[in-house]
Length: 490
Image 1 (cartoon, one colour):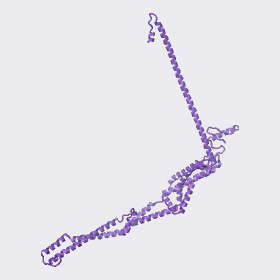
Image 2: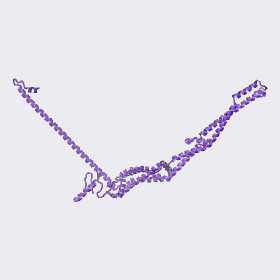
Image 3: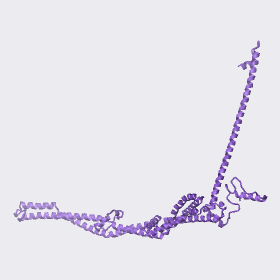
Image 4: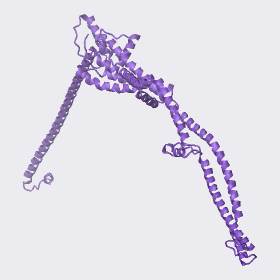
């Protein structure tokens, strides 16, 4: 067995003969199956039957690298069991979610399988990350790694444990909720009866019905009765006033008639002269009696009084009928309100169950203790993956993971440095090539410049020589110079 690095270097014994060398070359190609360090030992192939595939699936839930674990096969059972713990907590979480949704929706529905499965996969993946990212060496480092993960697992454990706790106390909770609902119905019925007294109730009952606690329990059934009673009271007041008027007018009219009769008959009485006959005093008293009768028609007032008394009798009959029907109307209205309250209850919801559990445990120390023991038990189960990982200590597989991580970092660092050196060398080579091309371009330009300068010097020398010859020829007698000389001078 040998360890192969990413750059192909391998340290192993020299091959003995051609056949062994060829066999090791085949092993080398098999081992180089991934970048970085090769993980699979050559003499430990991975089995591929159903039982081992199941074990690999459980170990995958624990975040195990099978190629690293192949170096320590004795650790497979440990990490298979750890994967089983992760699967168990995810299953419990899915079951808890199914119960919570059933309580919220009032029963089980097929569509709830989708969020239940999503929640179970999420918890399984979370626990997989918690246990696979907790590898460390010494206890201090392991504690520093596991403490925040344990707090996270504890928080999710509280969420998962609550529906399970409700399930354990389901019978007591439902009984308490039904009793509370029955008490609520009884309280509503009593309040409606108290806040809507009978019309002929005493003043104390009416004063209690006007209290602030009855503001929302008024049925308004006594509106008709109150209107009839107010009309009856008004009619009775009118009757009393008319009767008083009729009595007063009748007495006054009788006094005037008696005074006129006594005056005319000569009867000696207060206000009369005592002289018989129809004298001026007799006629005056008769005129006064007739004038009062004309200005104070007692018969009309008596007719009005009879009409008012007829109305009073009708109102009294209506009031009696209304009072007789009031109790039945009030009973019907109260039953309607109570039926509305019962219909609004429906299935027992999740929040109602929590409230009922708090009320039950607040009144019983035994139930409170049992609730916390059950809650802690389920939370501990949800925290088991992290607890098992912490309590298992440093395993050989953890050591291999740490060594492999360090080796991978070393290989990666060396690869980066090699890549950096290669890139730098390539850049330097390109820089040298650019410098050479620039130098060559400058050399060519300098050469062309010198050639041009040399050509100019030769042309200048030729022109000077030609000009000198022309000057010499022009100095002879009769020679005015050739045209070429003039051209050159020009």
